[in-house]
Image (cartoon, rainbow, N blue to C red):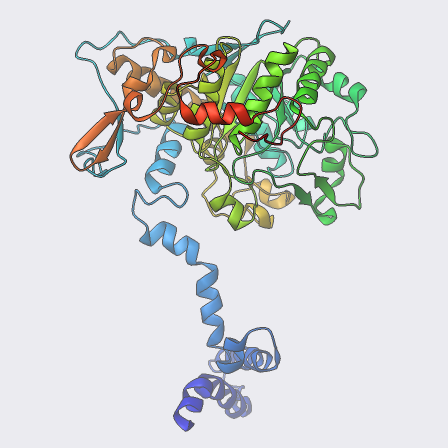
Length: 536
């Protein structure tokens, strides 16, 4: 016991004794700095003994603080000193380095061969052609969005800035993203926080995301306000309207921006009162069934002057999306596009259980949505976007090969404007000024420089995609098919994605007998008049 006490309090005792015995000799100039240091540590030790929150500090005064200091910098130590180039937490060093290099317009070539073990199950690649195609101009990599019911179709780039709200991101981050999007002719999704003045400053194309809080077009009770919506939606800078049903990182979960974080700018942008929590409900109040949702889509299209209207969601219960599909057939109303978000998507903050264990990953969700539309003969009328951890040309090619028409990236463009993956987005202490409302911190983000990086990242990624396509013997991304994407499934076997997954035939879901058992069972359970399932 005496040895234990000695080890626990020895350093505190030494600091205390040194302070007491050195006080009479402080007239020696060389001594007083040591006395001050010892006195400060002694006061810290006394505080540790008196505080009641941390048992380690009470048992080990002064020295116990080292534990919390090391814990506070553990992510940085791991990221910069310990993790391997391919360890994904959630993005690997190799992925971040690729984005940084392309954003800075530097070469991203890799010497001496791949670091990937190509014989590990899960390894993926694009098969190449013995006769590569001529290199295409990436400027032509665009997709026309707007079905037969749309009066103002939009030609979108195949790679765009995914939804990130002002409030989650700083004003300077929004400015940089939008200026880069304007220069590169790709769109910038506003996120559900509505259209801020910073989105409008540089004239970049916007996709206005409409969440359950109806920010920017809400009435005093938090419901949808048609007049306010029409006023903003008819802005020429707004190219499309995206109804957010859910997001990958926290599907089915609402959100609250605490009242102390609601600044006057955020309140004005979202149309919420100051001094109150800003609540995003977990579901919409403007509709409650698939049929009502189709009517809401038609209403938004009319109010916006005929602009493309679609929705974004992370797939959950399969019968719910099929219920939406049945409502499309019953009403004849079609969304112009659907953005499928994968559960691997990011967010400023979410419960751990949601980020880890709720929602369908992107590829499975994308394939399901693509198959349902094909099976209903609707695929040529509705475009599909994909979002969720997509930062490289291969990431984009892989989702295009299994059904997407274009890809969106949020964290990729965050890296481009300086994000270092400190994972402090929810603390308001982002070290790079990207995800903070602290005026001094965001001042460090220089808009013209970061806008250049956004532009370069997009351009160089599209150039890399063009080179990959040429290698595969293709001239346009729309030619990518599942048989171009290959996965290793064991130490001794690789398979084409066309062999790995079920792909429905056009009109298959309209037949009396559906060959794909899972799709047939889900189709029987789906209801156009409710999101609830009916017995199969």
